Amino acid sequence: MSIEARRAIDRLPLFSGVPEAARARLAVAARPVRYREGEVVFRRGDSGADGMLLVLDGLVRLHLATGAGRELTLGLAGAGEPVGEVALVDGGPRSADCTALTPVSALLVRHADAAAVLAEDHATALALLRTLVARLRRTTEQVEAVGLRPLPQRLAAALLKLAAADPAGLVRLPQGQLAALVAATRPKVNLALVEFRAAKLVEPSRAGLRISDPPGLRALADAE
Picture (tube, rainbow, N blue to C red):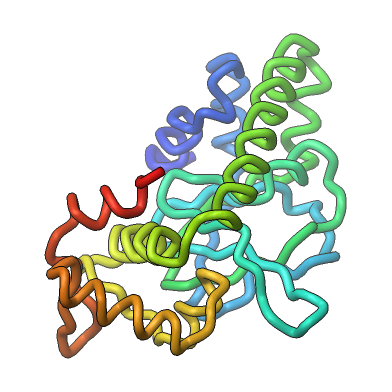
C-alpha cells in the first residue's frame, strides 16, 4: 500500500464514516491506474466490477450522448474526487461515459473488495450508504442547477476546473471540446470568451488560455 493511496482514501468524504481499519484494507486493495489524454476510462453500459475510480492527478469528464447526437456533460472530477461511487456498492453497469481530459493517475477500488469490507461490518455499510445517498442528492441538484445556469457561468466554472488540473494553470482544451463540455455551440463559446478577454478575466497564450483574474472568474461562476 502506498502512502499516497492511504492518504487519498482517508481524505475522501465518501469514506468519512468508515472505520480506519476498513479504510486501510481498501487502500491495500486499491489498484493504481493511468490514462492518456483523450482515453476512454469507461463507457455507459460497461461492467461496474472495477468499482470506483479515485482521481489522484488530472481531470476526467462524465458525459452522455443525447438523442440529437450531442453530448451532455454531467460533471468533471479532479484530484481527490471519486467517479463511479454507485458501482462501488452494487457493481452494476456504468450509467455514463467517462473520458480523461488530461493525463490522469488514479486508484481503482473494486466492488468485490468494498463488498468484502462492508459485509463484515453492517454499521460501516450503513454509514457508507448514507454518505453515498447524500452525495447523489447533491449531484442531482448540481446537474439541475448547471442546466439552468447561463452559459457565461457554466463556462467560467469549467475554465476554473480545467486550469486547476493543469500543471501550468492553463486551459488547453480546443474550443469545440470546450463547447461540448458546457453544452453550448462553438460560436457561442467563442463569443463568451471574447467577452471574458474584454473583461480581462482570461488572456490567450501560445500554449492555451490563461486565467488572468481568478477571483473575478470565480465570482462569475458562483453568481446566483
